[in-house]
Amino acid sequence: MRPILFLALSLLTAAPALAWIPKLDDTTARAVIDGAYGRQDAPPTYLNVDLSVDNGKFKSDGAVKAFDGGDACVSGWLSAPTAYDKSGSRPTSLTLSGQADQLAFQAATARDNFKSLTADDALKDAASRMPDGQIRLDLMVAGLKDQKQRSAYLVRLKGPDGKLIAPVKASYVNDWKADASGRFGGTLVYYFEPTKAGINANDKVDILIRTEASSNCAYAVNFDLGQFY
Image (tube, rainbow, N blue to C red):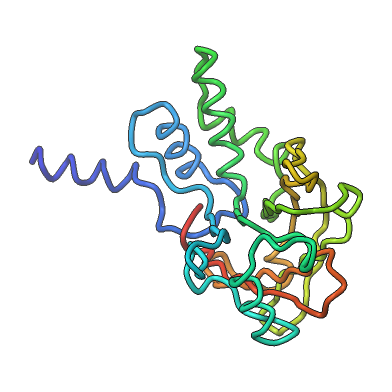
């Protein structure tokens, strides 16, 4: 009976099948907290796509497609990824996350400060960290001529009916710095409400990006919401 009992307990305490969690639940909260405290492997709470270029390919190979402007937009990016004076800035990384990732940060901070954190406590203020139903996109860019041009970036989520969904909120991380050539790099942050647009928690979705450049190029980066909580 002991092996059977152990299996039953494991199934009861295991995290649910992978899919983005629009509203944090008790089972996922426990899994995230236990992962932060080292009681189990940390579950995946975000999905990253690396858009840096190496030997003429994106490190996340095949991650970028042309949404507007044709394939020359992508081939030009791959052939001269840092020719910012001609192309404008470039996205270098995209990361999607939700309430579970916000909890992962909270739990890690609590552990580092020698404090305990329960799932009940985490669920009480989950919506204050990030409203239910929202998803966060962190977009790292490099090569921006002026920090004022951060607002020139246009980012949309493509809905299942082809409708382009604007973010409900946009901001940026306080990590912006100039490189040796005086070009700026840092992180832009966007919040979307996918479920209101008919997107399911395990769908594959396109993030569409136009940089500050005056060209007609726009890019699509595909994400699988079924790869993280």
